[in-house]
Image 1 (cartoon, rainbow, N blue to C red):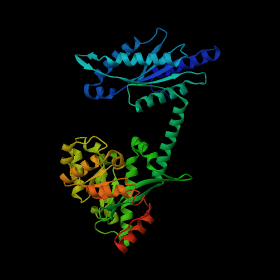
Image 2: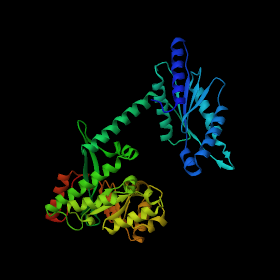
Image 3: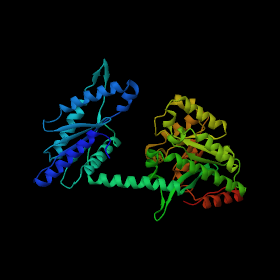
Image 4: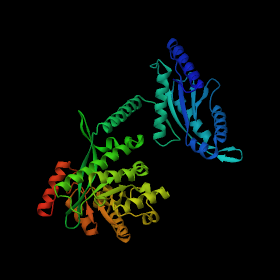
Length: 432
């Protein structure tokens, strides 16, 4: 079902082109789909009338990029379709796309305002394998999506691999929905050790997907899509629930001492979820877990949003006794102004900086540790893989460390066994 009559008209014309090409040898055509980048901001800030006038100006400028035999149609919103008749060479279509990109570089003057826009462009050449306009629209739209994903203001040419990737992505998204509904996400817990005494002081909860018939799937294969689709919010809720259940389990065995804390990664979407605080409160209360056993890890990007709501949420989290940590510190766009403004307890040193100590020296790690000390924060180094790194981090004054030098992420049963060892001898360290 098409959303507009114009799109239906384009579909009918494409179907006629397909019929014509089936009856004529060497008959091919090109198809471009354009989407104006950040057009929504024009409508939102300047109004729909200004947006409509910009669309008219864009359409007129695009028309000047085409041959007389080519057809351009706006199919809805800020999307345009261009039909390039008798075009068999993808380079011809790319030349048109480049002319379009170049034509949009010049700003538009509308009602005394200077407006700028650019376009993401999908390109498709009919190779006589298509039988319906629906398939043409599907594939050129896939190419357009790839152009947006790879930075906007660019074009992408459709290839069979794109369709395979899209099908895989759709299947993965459906599987993620099912995984949330059937509680297939499971926490693993990577131990965190204090330096220099190597005392176990907590864990980081790391999510894993136990997928039927495929086994354990690491987060690198699904976290990005979960964030993109918004499913990360429900996933995070389950991680928090499981973490509190684990703490309750350890409390029942007298293994949860006051100094133990469990760190949970909180994505930007989860952090902005208006129900985050109430969900935390309800879960902690239901499980009879003290808030001081939790640490929430957020990214630098959250702090840079400069929203009063961010400070308010952070303040309320701190008021509950929950500690706050900046994950992968130094890999984003940090600002000392914002860092000192927010109630942060811990800076986590990214694994990439720990790895660089052996080749590029200690300057970055040393700087982060000294910064944390000056701000009365503590540091945790991630991804320490050997004793040399642990020794160097200790010498630099790092407060704690996690990584394969001590232990990989452990199942609940293995983490429980580790805590039992800790309670018996005071020092617990697994083999890597």
